[in-house]
Length: 362
Image (tube, rainbow, N blue to C red; front, side, top):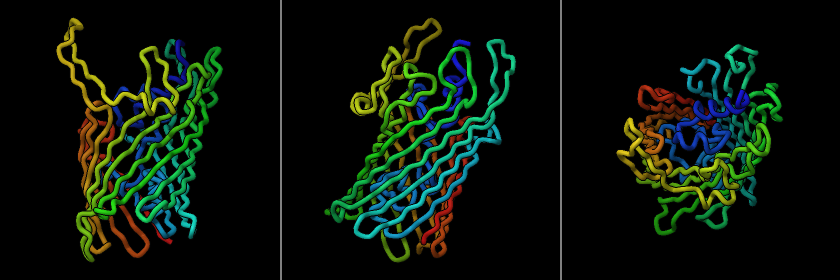
């Protein structure tokens, strides 16, 4: 077998757990870190970095924690890509706790179950079965540097168990890896336009993750989120907010297959990608240069802090993924229930994906 089962699983996992460009699948590992939690954000096209005003800020933008003055628990469970199997699911839990005079602390836990896998030899004969999963635990903190400016930090432990207990040939690893990463974030509310805010989060920065050996280590999915939020209407009974985000993978894989370390890749990662079309003879017939990232945006309407309606649009030109999303929410006292629906094309793995989440205040 030319490659180990772990390497094959890595590629399969990446395909199943992300809707990023095909180029990004081969650029980094542990792409489950890119799954966006929160049905609320899902209903707005996955644009939330400049809003980040609930417990999911531990993922979207830790700096947003600085503006939250209450304890809050957020829970989400999703049957992830059910068309690939009924044993794939994603769980996310987040808790935030403010400390007067210091800031707000948060912790989140994510778990992705990739189901049962089959190990085969080079002839296709079945050798056995094993389970695959990934999880991460993050500690976050946000504090204000000024009345309208906050910063946030995050530290994350990652465990990726793609092929635990599977050994192939003389390879050193067994498809199980551990890694650490950190986030840096900020949130700024413009004094001359108090309804306008800007958010930035550079997440998943850390050393490469090793499944087999150091020579075959892969970079983490270091990602840059930048966005704006504008509270168009803020009255007693009506609130309307508009959000827009830009996401870009800060990973640079060179033609020879090597990758830059994360502290270099955040500067060398290409901002454009060229899509080339060839005919049956291999001749280039068309080429198109495009932004190597994702743009998304959405709106949220609240009536009397009781129920909400949401809509959004997700635009990923390199990955050829464009879809609208819809959502809603109901709040009663300290409880909020949110729903998000992805109206992706019929043949896309995320088509008709529904997300439900519960937020509880204390």
